[in-house]
Length: 271
Image (cartoon, rainbow, N blue to C red; front, top):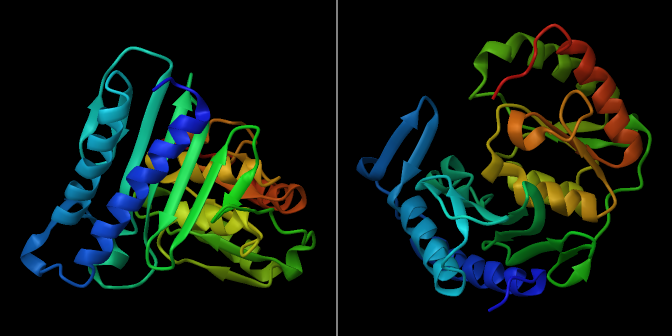
């Protein structure tokens, strides 16, 4: 196969469906002794590892020379401009507790910029996908970010900074200000799905800190291709490097950016 975007997308969707089927087969079957703790409140199971292997095997079959960055397996280095970024189970804690909000995320970066993004929610059989410059889709139907521009009508998603607890005071101050000026806040436990829900207008905006590239690479492309804006807390396109991300339509992105820039102005975010 040649390395065009449509073929990359086809392989990503194939891998997502295969791994998603495996996730559903194992849903509700995780025993306490099968859960390992990579860090505080950061869990991994045999299902994460097997899901990742299924995805990597499919990519390797079609593109044996491509580089791969996967959450559980680390970096599979190869030379070239294309780089796969994989989260085989985003929302592991939800999965362990049988909370039906988890997914898998697959992105292809070209020279460090997302080119293809796929996020699959197997519970609800929702396949989100995008190609840079080609629009964003949910189950092959075009999606757009919300048209709501006034914060008081906006439902905003976030994630608690469990990887960046040193910034908890600033996070809580920003949370309070956003909470007081919006229609509501949600914290569901999967950044990839939060971004997809923002891309299709279920959420009007999303912000979080302390994330990894595999959490947000695919979802960030979906938001942008759905007509939204994505940046870090400085308004710059460095969210894959810093793990600090704001997403939404133009008006809500500006609203969130103003608040987050103020509350984090004396604390330079670090991964």
